[in-house]
Length: 424
Image 1: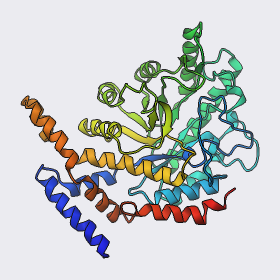
Image 2 (image 1 turned 135 degrees about the vertical axis):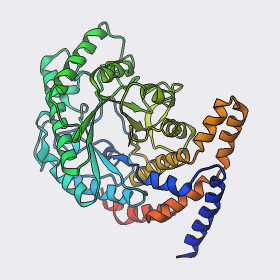
Image 3 (image 1 turned 60 degrees about the vertical axis):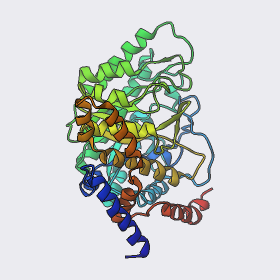
Image 4 (image 1 turned 45 degrees about the vertical axis):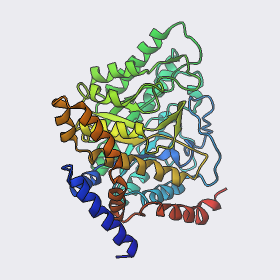
């Protein structure tokens, strides 16, 4: 063991003693953290470009990746290489979240209503080889059939049927992934449907979206293979005045049809916290999907960092004893910085927030609350900020065999010099 390792272990033992005085067993907490998987989003690796033969420009799609940092993945092989590099710098065993536009299409033009299992079998083989699990998303953007701003809620039946077929095929792919990998793949559905300015007829679009969803979900798959989730949004680029799939719409649909509701932390008003929604929705929803992002002034999908908002979300999940009911995935895309670094920063920050929440003496806090000793509750919550979270995190990384502290930066810079800099 190196001198650095000895220092990390010594610091952990001191931290373990301090947390022990609060009734928290840090060894058990780390065992629990090791069981939690984060689903890494493939679209951070190439700025939501995908690998279709046809142009998949994000222009007019309600999405935008800003920046042009060199080294983005240009094909499936490079993206897989980048994902494995990022995962080697992150403790734990995690998942990879795919979009339909990331299939292996063999240089052929395969339209969205023709995407099939064969285009993702290579991804599944790769996941098997690397002991990973996969999740799946339909891609309802950056396509001529989405140019009007409406897909599943379009008043054009041909457009609706095209996207209904696409969704059905993506669900079939998700079921294939879950069957092969022995872990149900979540198929998340988000559509950019909406209007830039005030519509005269909101009702018809929402009725059509409901009808489309009913048609999609009429085809059943085993929930041991795949699970369906629905993701709403407050507004998007080009849909500032009206979003068909609003939070209220999808809450209602998910509850009425037994689907998972997806909460994206960047899809709400800046003063509206996702934290408070979690325990409310868990009274009625069996499961939730959380897309972890960081909005700055708007849904700008900044790289996740360890801030108060992220910590509060993880505390709410842990305090509700809902780690088995809330699925965690990342959803941001920053094209202005090293993309490997973006993966590692966001995933490690999410895991640190989870660790901080797991290290809370929840039972003690609740006991104080039930005695109406609220000043002591507040004091303890505040004092927890001074506890040696970093020492426990460093030890977790050491035990997992990944770089401790900022050591991963050297690995990322080396990879940039040796691999990313060669990409034009």
